[in-house]
Image 1 (cartoon, one colour):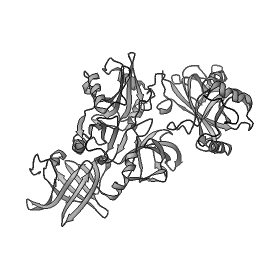
Image 2: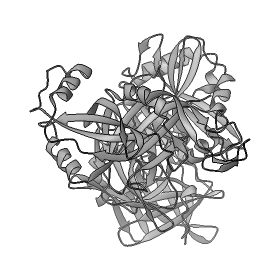
Image 3: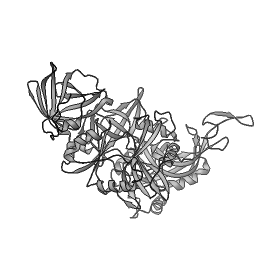
Image 4: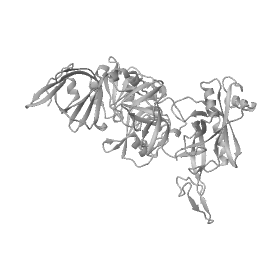
Length: 609
């Protein structure tokens, strides 16, 4: 039976201004800081964290479990709003059982440094009631039914519903948190950020990413990719490995002592009976290893979204009918860590490890930076491509749409949906997104979501997005991809015109957008590979006002656009990369246009149809 995550929100309580000496002794004794602390060094506050009363979701901490919880609370971190992308702001050092308002409570004490970063700000926020509530995340094994004593997930009783007992009395069912394994962290949260501001309790049985844990958790597995919207950010003289990018869950397979476990991008074990069964049927190498893969959900030949895959793994209604796993990278083998190794070395060792399971590997192209746009046409999915640098550990994700990932910091109800406060990662540092983003769907605090935007820029110390739209859960659970390269190239993108390529049945539509107008051209039997070697293609100017995102196959920037009558000369960057000419022509008595690359590698100069 899988481990469960419990999450409870309760009230903060301020301790006395005068710090009793025994509390300082407990800090030095329980935490053992490198330098002994005194009352002049620290602030101390306390929180009533859990009680033995039934909470609003039907769970309770029976008093006989309080001693175990007190033991596990010692030395656990204190965060702000469950932000795991930031260091702890305080630490729990002592807990005790107390009676308050006729109920049995666990009271936990935490401390932080007066001279620490923003230490005084934290004290003011607590004492002024800004941080009014606290939340605990913990792992437990058994939700014990209060009526029959069985696992309430398997018995007929449901929390908060009334049942008639054998004695003819009516009793309300609840469950007890039993077999508590670990306290993950406690967090300070803003007053009013949850319902029932005095105390709000939550229990997550499935699918919540925060609490799934393992004693064999691999460290430092996840290295977020760097997002790209233009290939001009890559070194044209360098060598790269290019692979298809899938809308899939990034995960790690860890084989140790003959046991294979799936880990999410946050390093925690993914607990899913469906996934466990799927992995048990895979034919994998017998050596100990850690590999990175992409867990894809399919319905027929159609790949489904990350949200659909998550629902499927949690046993909920989903469009996914089967799973597929593609291996993309080697992290460790036989105790040797390859996380910092060059991309070409990791790929070589990965192919050696999976030489008998080569069909599981994501296909790879090796390209020079100057040829990267040619490889894109041969390799890209509707989502984009992943790129590893051959001679370093750098990883990139180029998306067809202007996509980025962000962490949900908080949400508030807004009409039929929610307004989300988000943060992203830029050059390894967290950066808040300036405005809230509305969406009709519900995602939990700490989730990583995928956004599509029109443009991006920095605004003081925040990131400003133009027309952001949350597309769903992102593949990169744990920490969002880094957007530093998107911000680094803003000036170039804002000064240039843009183009988009859309697939329409058997045709391709090229839309050129300048600052004053948008013009569309339709190509029949278009082939980007033939275009790169000098092939001419006939095009007709069309009206196209239905650019659905799912039809988009590429977009980029247009520079140095020059008009000569009806002819256009311009350079493009992105999937189409180079100098191009679009000039009038006559075909079969009809006025059309000829489109070709003027600096092509001349392999063919035949006309397209």
